[in-house]
Amino acid sequence: MNKLTSVLVAAAVWSVSGFSQAASVDGAALKAAVDHPVRSMTNKARDKYRHPVETLSFFEVTPKSTVVEISPGSGWYTEIFAPLLKDAGKYYAAHQPANSTSDYAKRTLAAFNAKLAADPVYKNVVVTEFAPIAGQKVAPDASADVVVTFRNLHNWYMQKGDESLLNSFKSFHAALKPGGVLGVVEHRLPESRLNTDWTKSGYMPQSLVVKLAEQAGFVLEATSEVNANPKDTADYPGGVWTLPPTLSQKDVDKDKYVAIGESDRMTLKFRKPLK
Image 1 (cartoon, rainbow, N blue to C red):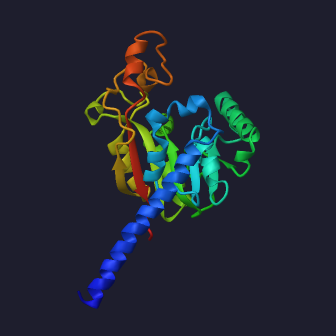
Image 2 (image 1 turned 60 degrees about the vertical axis):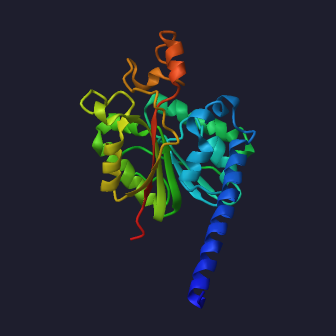
């Protein structure tokens, strides 16, 4: 074995062992955050559908990451991000605009802020604003390692269609460092149903999501089936809200929908190019 070959072999061994060790450390930190006592039992019960450890690993989130979560809602993932990032990372929660006139927006933002005030684990959370409009700043430009959003794209799409999503993706692109990751989880419409009236169903076509993200400057790097559910046919009377956790049809066929479980979801990792 010549010297060059020896160096390459040694480098390969170091790289493989180093990757394994880093993955183990990050996995342990993610698991600790998912198991943190601040999490409610109701939220923990949904881990079997939302797979937080696997999802955040796929999105390359580490305890040292600067993460922006778009539209965190009631804070399902906030309960994970806050303990994970409080010591060495940074967490921006881009919630409803403070000046919104919507009763829903006012109510959900107030509840979110009350949640943050109720436990010191949230003391380092930085609340910013998000709306799917042009020029919306969700964090300082080029500051984030990872931007994530979970099951929100359909809500923005129902406002102004392609324009809303393109505005959103451009905002995320601006917030990310070059080389940063955009992680998207969304209810997935089967491509065979594109000719149906899907726009208010709560489901989104993966092909359209990818197309608009790429128009905003992202590159689709990888997809994951970690949040897939082959039982979901996406053709229910009340759209995606027919399924758990909403169960919008109340007792009508409830056992059937509970047996299906939560929706089939695309899990997409986009990259902001270095240049």
